[in-house]
Length: 505
Image 1 (cartoon, rainbow, N blue to C red):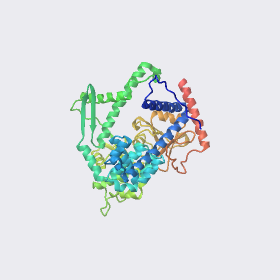
Image 2 (cartoon, helix red, strand yellow):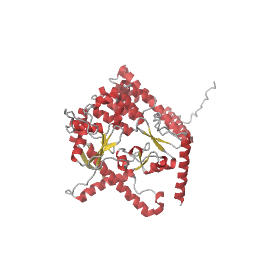
Image 3 (cartoon, rainbow, N blue to C red):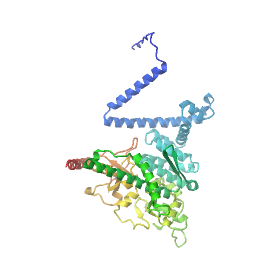
Image 4 (cartoon, one colour):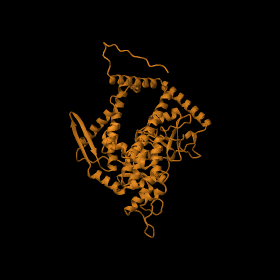
């Protein structure tokens, strides 16, 4: 074993403090890490990011378990701490908020081993665990959670976080009817808004209201944001003509969002206080079972000869026992919908009120997620419908994209040239960028047995989040064979050549 080298310091030079030496070493260590990452290829860097995320999930799951065990042992009494809060603040140097979050996670994994197992295996992340922990922390729904936790963990792995959060919210609404009423009524009763100044800057906040009103306001705001974007695009085109694509826009998205709010106020002032409100349409997506039970609860559902309320879509008896029905088949929870097309949750009571008022368009879905009723403002769904496809999707379906479906295109999941049908089941909603990428890169979408859609690359590999397992596909919808992959690659290359030729021309 080599002997350690001896460092001789000049007695005339001041020796660095131990803390300064430590920071110098740490700085050099981090520089080495960054240098190593910079030297990686794109594929290696992509792989390393995934590895780091999986390592973090495994460590976080074990840390949450350790906190749960420490709490059960009253380890906080060590060093005279009065509680786990004080112990964790002292031991980990956490804020009170961080302590509360970790204790919530620890309680959830301690009560539901499925959550901790999926987390430690890397199949779900801290965001999904946090949502489940919040649900476990709701005492009014805690007793119902064990029957659904396995399905919710599967949803957490299979769905993007936004869709998963909506699924959990539907469960909470079903399991905590009284509490959901209280929260809804509290949000309406204590609605408020404030417009003030912060120095010379505008400071504004809005809270409360029901889901229908929330969606209506968001729609108005997004329309004004789109108008600001169109204005920037027109200005750029006027200045640079055919070379406009090589120049940036005059304002950032954040700046346009501010100017859109100002434009809303100016438009309202120009219209005057007595002007009629603009006609806006709110689209509410609700599954047929929820809609039937909503009507039955209000005494508005049709009845059979013996006076039993029946489902207006199936003719079968309707009841208010949806939660009990779901306990028999928890997987059906994913098909429950009661929200706007932007994904804003709406309470069934507000759906009924809006449906009777007639200023919204309801969209009722069957068990397969297909439209069975478009409401009074639209004829019944009868095949290909761009509008129907957009109503069922809140955002661009490309993994990780958050652009609203209203700003997106509707295209075939399975291409028309490949015998893909032009109907709602084969409709995909993609923003302009990802719609072009789908054609140029040979991407394809497939629906798995769990009902979720997945994107495949031209080489047949599937785009999945870190840690997620490859889903099961039906026999008639399996990933492409090597021959099909080669055919798709050929199509992609031909389309890319045509695109380049058009661009040069």
